[in-house]
View 1 (tube, rainbow, N blue to C red):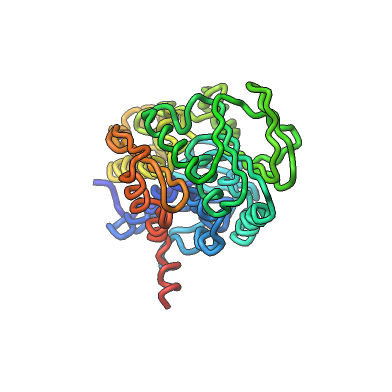
View 2 (view 1 turned 90 degrees about the vertical axis):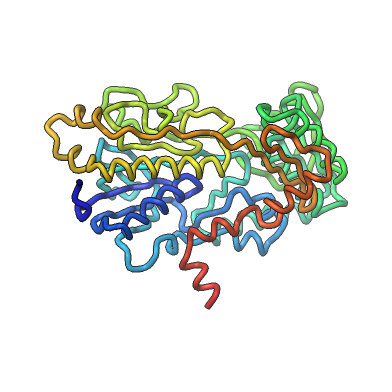
Length: 414
């Protein structure tokens, strides 16, 4: 049996859904005899932002304030674990990462949960709570003063934003333009799209399908406050509005693995998207680095897996596999081996991540919504409204996330 008191360094890059889940699970090992374990969580922001709740935060200032939780409260007091407020610069080799400030961190196990730049203003740019809240407030104030709003993109984010804006501002003209033939991800049943169009219509939202909107080069990535006319390249229509909100596009920035690719002599990324290639176990595809895991949006798993709750599930799977490796003593053997490749190939068998949950919950304002459960589409029905209200609309599951920040909860009670 491996020595539980040995020094073990786990570095988790990214504190959103996948990274937070992995870091929280692994830190628990300290209570199970692994006294030398240190989990370091690295994120460029001082606060976790509950991005799933952005549509509600956009129209509810009090909720927006509560949707930022301090990473300083992530780990309990009295532990070796640490939060580092920096951005990853480079993965130097099989045991070191470099941060933007030049600091190097040694790792025995690495979790790359850097995610991507999500569609539209859901991707808050500010690195502090004050900056993030101000960013959302500026857009909200633009909506307060607008007569018309254009939402570009009819995925879940676009549908939710259009619904909450229309419900909050019933006198404003809200238009949702989507480039595809139906709303929401196409791997879900058509009834979801039909129900969303129906319920958006009840709130006065005009839905336009099959039209790709041209985004000017001088347009901000997320949103724009101010009157503009955007052009539909498919229809030839012009869309004039006072506020434009983009819910399209998804960008990955994975240049940080270039040094590791040079060390391994092997590309780790998809050539077009930049997504990191992984095995079903969420380990990097290269067999020489079985101790590097990539859960969440930054990996090359199908688009149907790119949801917050599925990223969290992947973070849990990655943590479970690292626990097996720790229990086997892999880290001790790997860093002292003359033949690291042979040790890597003898790593304990990791468990594959299973995408077994078929679930989609899309609030359309606080009272309406559509859902898919076990391949059954709840579109236009009232049952869908009840289901989505109970499970998501109230707080967009923020209460569940607060459990990750125990010191914040304790301070609030006091």
